[in-house]
Length: 486
Image (cartoon, rainbow, N blue to C red; front, side, top):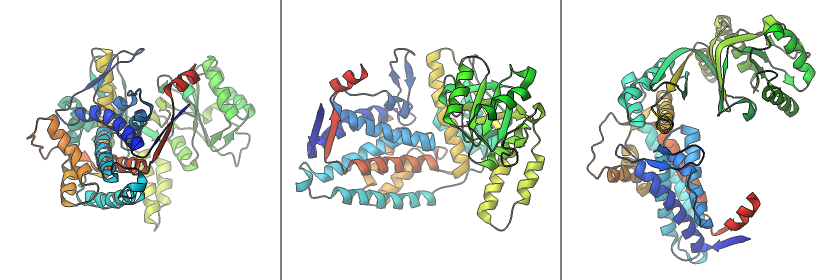
């Protein structure tokens, strides 16, 4: 059975849900923000101030209000996906903006309202464009490791760990990659080694365990072919691997059929072979990774049968793969010839030259590995989230620059420009002050990555701008959902 709410009743229910989750998240904001402890039946308690993590665990009994919870959850998820940080800021902005818009819509239904919902949506879009331009004007490039240390400290709230993260991000550079993982020790440590990152991960979640796969000294097969039959993989690979069949195998190809992915997963799960599939549509990237790991690039246009010998397979000291990326550490190949080839492709087109320079930097790049340990599982979970956010923040700052932190940049713009966003722009700063009891001095060393600031604002405006066009809500009763689950 469905629940149907119209007009102001629908909007009030949504707003209650938005407030319920945002009121929890905003208490975590700033240097004096507090943590939330989340009960998890199977995994034990989790103590964190990570906005997206908290939002994921909030469900309300009222069906309409729970849709409001999902609105804030969506804002935090999209901000986390695109920026890796700023999730609580996005929630605070979304709550304030939603309140402003619902107040202006009035207490009556849409037919009697003095405001147009579509008009408000357009006002938000116009104000957002104006604000983003203002943020760009206030952006400064990162020119020293000290700036990264300030960014990392603000995010992780620990000087020693912040300095470690900043040092690794500074060494790996704008095009480098930094991996974090659990450690069996009690300490948080890190190192920088030769590495190359593909911006794609394994082709099925079943290739990983616990969200990622760590593969030691694998054999690596690379081709621009489409592997759509057992004949294109099993025979040549088994012949090439031979007596080394106990070594892990990573197959990088332009595409795989669903049947082949399923067969490879079954082969792995049954213990016949530790095998992984990585689908890379970009042929240039496959050629680059071939140079890194020392494999022969098997060109399907010249060799449709994908014939391969043992000498054609590459390797690396270690590969770490998840659903989004693949990191190859200390590849056994020599990239010098590939770099020369890319250099020779440069011409008068600046855009193409920039792309080639990025790929060259990636081929010559370094990768960082940060291992997170602690005295308990609860503490380790806490630090894993903090380290992840700090890595994202420092990498983002290095790539795109920084602005004043602590909500100051948005506050200055909100005070200067009288738009529908003015109150929402000042909300993060005001909340940081409230959490600190007022009178908090924000030093110049507190900086935010510009990408985090812009993403948090953009995602909040996008979701709320769409939400305010709502004049009806249709949702299943909780009892019906329980029946479906059973």
